[in-house]
Image (cartoon, rainbow, N blue to C red):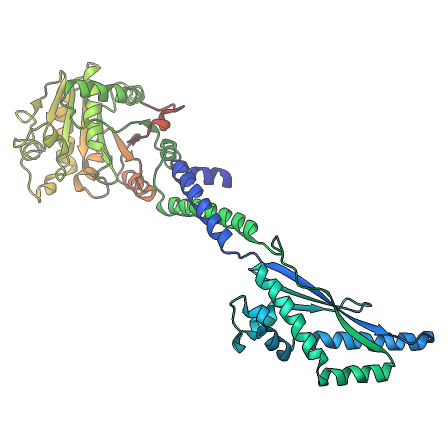
Length: 458
């Protein structure tokens, strides 16, 4: 059972640089967005005192009773200060108008939400505070509210309430401004740093999660050892870089032969008493480099002194035939019809290497391919060649590939970087279902880092 760390590492392998770059971009973008999504708030505070005047001589009970009456009166003034009357007067005050915010009645509720009035217990104080993104506007609001409340406090209605409190408690009171609204220098509430950090974290995680989900959804091969793990019964023969296109060039052919030398050696070591001398190379889909692999492997066997025949059995792609410019000519179709390879094989410019081209094919020629005809062709080729390598069409979409796979000594599956895992798994299951002997997998078009520490690199 693989740990989640291993699965995470496996999913991101081959994509670490991309994921890291996207994470950095996401972190910077998320941090900027998060930082600017928060507006710092500045708090201004003012203080009003409503001083009490108690008679000089009072009993303890009378004193406590009158203090309780004053406490209730001060608590009631909190509501008075936040009343629409006071707030409307405050917003109509020149101090507030100077901020340019206006005095629209519709803005009263918003103004009230930013305003806080508190009465600290057992004091004669009323604390008025206002929070706003503009420190000057916050100070103006506090001063406007204090001025508006002073006006309301002095009118008849408030005076009547004050007189009632004085009559009931036999105490006098007077209002004074202890502190006017101050202009704050630093924000009272600033969530920019926290939201910037959170935005950076989310911005960094989203690309990583997206890359991980894409990797898990696509399930494509990105590194060589994934192929070895997915196919427990199909050994990894080796890994190859992108092979040269013009393999008829002697210099490039030598490079390709050198790269494929270890795969050829592993196939020779895996053979027993000359068996497995006929191989078919296929892939899950077109474009995995099977034709280049076929030709390169043929060159390697030829360079090792083995009489080698490469057979173009890909009736649709005809890659070997076109690459070696052997068209038009007779070939595999004529062999299937006549039962003889004589006269249909072309010697290449490379010593010990011959080609059996696809021949003059039509769309319906795949029906000529039968187990008995393929078996006869292979028997004929064995008589003259030490190694026969067949380039077939993709195993999942080629009729002739399934037939040839069941008759050769070993099948080599080419898997290119980026190939879908489920297609490779389907290919392996299909090969086993037709009775093919899977010689192994070759991971093609590998990147340089895949060769570091690889026991199967070529």
